[in-house]
Length: 115
Length: 112
Image (cartoon, rainbow over all chains, first blue to last red; front, side):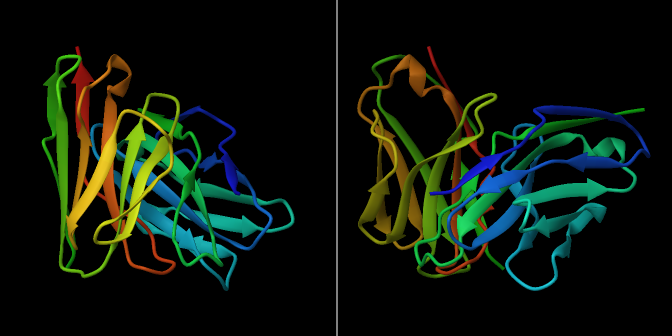
């Protein structure tokens, strides 16, 4: 079974500052990794995913994440945030070998971008 | 392109009343379908998933049930709601193998 730990429940930053949202996972098998974003009272939207290949993954809205197998991490980064990036961000992991596809989510990190 | 519809957006129901939330997917066939519940500060909890018509797997024993009467229709039900059933319910779909989840806009359920 997998588990996901998002180390910060809330991250306040100022507009145009860089941000890193941390995610660590635990799994006994190879994994796929995802970041989702949720705006208030909406569903989740996929930001980016790591399935295989390059460990640096670029997503929508200028976000990127780096898969680090030795540290079992998949931290999300953006070099310069905007007010509109204020949202909750979820890291998720799945078993890459499973044919029945399920995700395990972290508890989320609320990113608040202040002017 | 594929779309997912979930309704209603908000719902207020008294304790002991029945529940039916519906989710439909368009533009794909034989998707995996999921119901999640989201509670504040607790992330997303997988309630049910389905890999085909009539095939339902329950992740957490509770007061809820799910059904899949058609390929692209997924229904979440309860015969008698409890206060603890309040929350934000999300339907999602994915392709069969190794693809991300696509979420609906959710239903905010308040049990009073």
